[in-house]
Image (cartoon, rainbow, N blue to C red; front, side, top):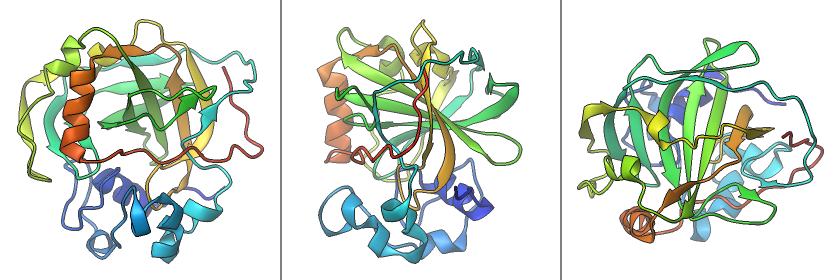
Length: 259
């Protein structure tokens, strides 16, 4: 399995679901190669089925054997370690990245699993969901992106279902984010734990980035319980993006999905 290189990690943190050619995230170093990366999108001639042909660095988007997202099904029962979540008030700014809305997080929020610690770098949203459960899609999904000291990524995914207004989401939603890469400060700092469900049971699988370069070696943890969101809250995000922002589910191949 191809591991994440430092360059790919930097690219992911600068562009996670964004291909704005002049942008970079507050959580990473700017890379000159990012400004030269080709335009990709979620539809048309630069959509997911063509990503692998856009750049030699994107070959795993077409050839990878452990790609994300997936349809979670045919589970393998396992004694999964409990998630130890120690998030603090750290969400400091929210920004339209072009293909997602991302919240940048200050240092200090940690996730521990299997005696390994990962720091939360940022979280962002997709609509509709990228991962599905036994064929069921959800109106929105949140990805909390963590990295350990070696740069290995772990993504904690939260699925949203239509229901009551999500007051925690509403506290950061609805801002004027029409300008790509123009961040809006969040005051007071936001604790993303308020967006997590009470039940922390989860599915686990080995996967990849869901955007170019589709690098593998990413651990995915998908919470089994959904959280509520209204149609208006989903519509605000969809209207801002102007299109669906989900990569289609990928082949599972010989991977196991644990629960």
